[in-house]
Image (cartoon, rainbow over all chains, first blue to last red; front, side, top):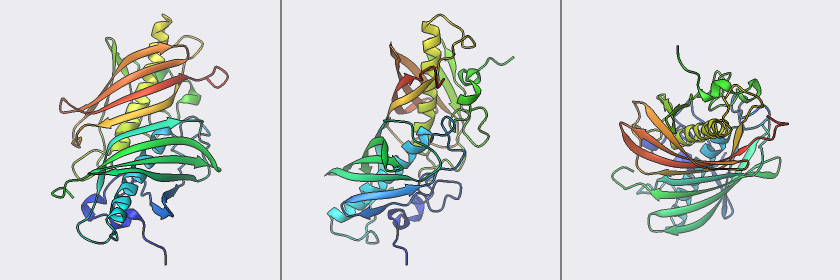
Length: 154
Length: 154
């Protein structure tokens, strides 16, 4: 039995996101998991996700990093409270800022692995750093400042 | 007769980008133009480009800002050399870094306007700042450091 991804715990209202919503049939539907103290997602770009021929589109990678990090922020907030992700009240985060450094062109054709590290949890804010690798080589680094959605919107 | 967009001058090799390639039928195909000393693009998100219901997906806005700013960097580099965009050799830029601040949720349904300002042109590097507005209100700010593609790849 496959373990559930962070995004599988999102409430229905939070499951339409183009990047990570399980109910968005046209979206990317990324799935993020814990791997020890890091978080991980794996994504297979389609042929259309091209920058220049042979390389992955930067905006796609920014999108994956964004959704993976907000998901990681939610998972980290539950963990910090000693709660499972299916307990109430739900915790959900949105992006306040996104920074991405493209270190080298990212080859298209294989899978991309994004790993997240929780840098800081403070009040409503969680900071997550990410690396994106292709063929075991880090091609992109990112950082997301995620902010907890107020309960009335959550 | 409609004036040509920056992206309409890209060589065929640079016209497959998911964000701005005129030859990528599945992509966003953004089109950027000069408006005085600023650059502008207008984009209509589709229903699938949702974050939470009613709001635009942040990764889409990061993608539009990214491609608009690399296009603006190219246009600015031609202008700095006193050349038209259809003259040789071609100038084309890729993203070294992308920073996006999400100031408020961006309502979905209307058009998004992204405006770029050239902050710096120095050697192979061009820095472009961008604002993204919906209904006349700035919802997102971005900054891109773009780097000229070496001629052998251009």
